[in-house]
Image (cartoon, rainbow, N blue to C red):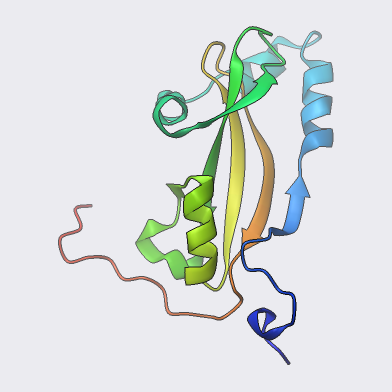
Length: 145
């Protein structure tokens, strides 16, 4: 069986296995005016998430659906066995393109965050990589846990 990288027209930087959470997001937003619990659970961005959004997030043109004041910021987290100790890190779009060629397979989770009201929601997830399995990255010797 041919590996994805060997298939004609295969692009490692193109998202595969896209899961879009738009319907779930719409359902949560529809429930928002009726339930304080929904607002509390979706407008409770962790301080680290808000800080990550401030310094590492990619700004969007979308307005926050809750406070209708702030602009949403997107964060892209990467997870995968091949990433070893680097799994769970934030990456920019440019870094994702480079990683797609360097790794066989990893998953990207995109989270939107409003820094004003704390709204946060998993927007989508997808898979990247060239399909060629590699050994997991090793933890550097000077790694501090």
